[in-house]
Length: 127
Image 1 (cartoon, one colour):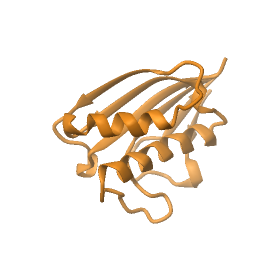
Image 2 (tube, helix red, strand yellow; image 1 turned 90 degrees about the vertical axis):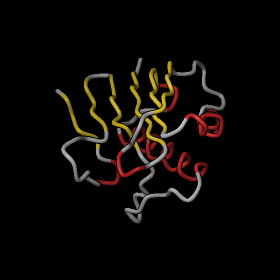
Image 3 (cartoon, one colour; image 1 turned 180 degrees about the vertical axis):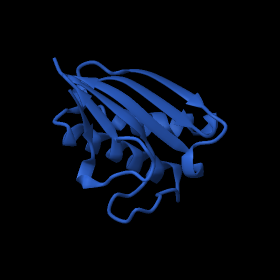
Image 4 (cartoon, one colour; image 1 turned 135 degrees about the vertical axis):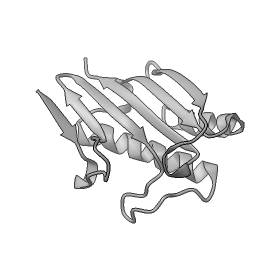
């Protein structure tokens, strides 16, 4: 049976779940840089935006009882490939000490929700 995962009990305004748990798999919707405490976007710098996105992604993991090492697939969407180096560096900081990095793609897209610069989704599996 599938279960919706809603970190901090916050429900999105659109028809989706931040995470969907099915058996031993967690599907994490694209996370953007919304600060869950204020409801405001964090877009002052690409560094701060990326950190907020990663924190949001990891919060969904935690809420479902998963850990970063359970991630098997990540997709990074960015508004411009010129952000790649910065996003990649910050992303890598969140995986220090991980056994096997998740498979991943990173692509530039024309527009992201709420005109953010980065959105990250993922799939995690518990062994």
